[in-house]
Image: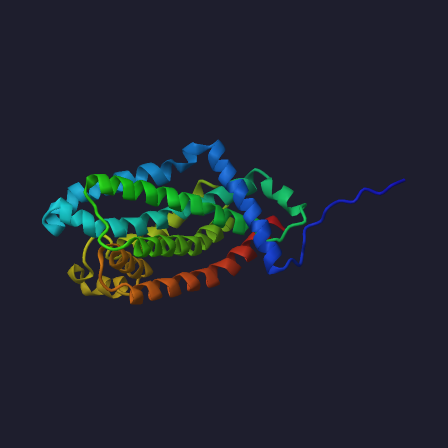
Length: 267
């Protein structure tokens, strides 16, 4: 009688194999978007609402005119929307676990971290969609890039890289909470101080001293200043360096925490 071999999860997979498995599962995430395009509503409608609302509501009071405020605000909103777009990773992973999808992953000969890496890499599509929508609407409203295409590309790459690192916070929370509905509430409580406690909407110098102390070290502030320098001209290298270091530090802390929480969650 011939024995039937059952695939077992790969316990020790090299870096190359892990990345390959992760990219394969990232394709699965992109396929889910194609089959369920309404999952992109948060990264298409929200950027438009934020842009129109803040420009026309606060532009005259803060900058003196809506046109001038649009130029300053857009790079900051690009950072904020990348930050909010990362919330979807934790929700999607928690949903898959609740539906038993990860039971299937456990039986496959893939790296343990591949489902998490695939979900994070798949979010590149969400990041590019939200940036495309935001920039397109802003150009229609009158925004103009003041630098060259190379700096514009560097700005996009920096924003996407920061978003990918930030996703590991979302993954960690998604592994901890019991239901998908709880993930956004926990993450928003963290993301709001990070994005609104920055110089995205108002100059850091206009803030009270206790808040200013946080704003000047906030990674969102550094990323916003880097984006403004890359899109509008001016110094950006130092701010980009700090934003990159923050991104690496976030990934270095939350990637192992997320992986440990994942192992505890699925066994």
